Length: 179
Length: 286
Ligand code: SF4
Ligand code: SF4
Image (cartoon, rainbow over all chains, first blue to last red; front, side, top):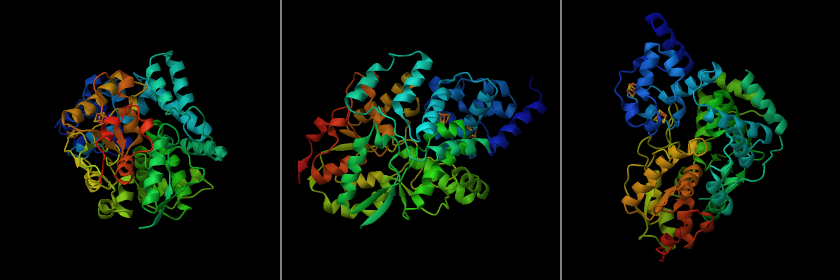
């Protein structure tokens, strides 16, 4: 369904959540022209903005492109109407996950494991984070060469780094996320 | 000029890029800059935290800002991702009282007043050493080294906060490299994304993006790529391990270039996955 009223509802929702003036887009394609992730996307950034304006909520939330995005913000910096497109994408990711509509959970899973590690140790424990991710993906040998090269050069964090105030860290996570 | 700075190493400089920290310590010591590592600093959450939860990202950055403030000097963050997070949060809590109060509640009993400035390695070298001293103090002749300055995508790309240099065409590192006596090539990829955020989740994509950057540097006849960012360095340095069989250029940290200018060698040469030997042979006694 895509009548005009619902349509503006989605635009309004997104403008509220991002604080961006998304309706100002005049489809100049500048965001798309500079996007390094374009070949991996099911549709382009300017089109995504168009879908938001037209109220194509499902299309936007179930797209693969919001997950291919590298969050490099090239698009946002270049937009002549000062729309932070990367933030729009970031916000759509959060809504998609919340509503169980995310098409590609790899990025989300990895980011979550990353944060679990920070919550537990205070600093990133690389080895644990990577292994947890690999276990989840059941992909044990895909990056062996990369891991070996890093290990040989002493560039893989094999041990956890625990900060002293781990209690405070846990509280910070709960307070920041609970508020 | 002697200076003391609060130092936030971030996770990379304590694990995958320890040699960057050693290199920074070495040249900063030489220029009279003292670093005080922030006590009990924690991970800033990089891009992961604000992707999952914006406020968590700010809270993680705010905790470190509060710890740094105790040192009563500006904060130096060599990792571009950490620098970006710290600077953005610092400036946002300055201008948003509600966010400021929320963050102070999250990090209690710590408190931040956002009174200090956050600086990257280029700014520190600019502000506390300066091109003139760099040019005067160099001991080795690097004039046969051609390099491309690779700033990476997060150093100056900030939307609601004013960056320290141009968002699309920064020049500050070019000037430092020039002062150190190298030939700095013009190229279009100063800020092109290397794809580091997807190294584990989409290796092919990262490989494609990093390959383009490496290919461009080779086409232009560079001897090395120079970057201040540990994520960019790591990612480009991993190219052969990601399956690239073509020639690859060494990827140097900005501080390593200064090691070359001052001492003719770099401590961390053995930590580079892409060998720097061929390039090092071009360093001459002045
Ligand atoms: S750059 Fe901005 S105005 Fe142009 S198409 Fe993209 S979002 Fe719309
Ligand atoms: S932030 Fe995402 S959409 Fe924007 S240019 Fe970068 S990869 Fe493309």
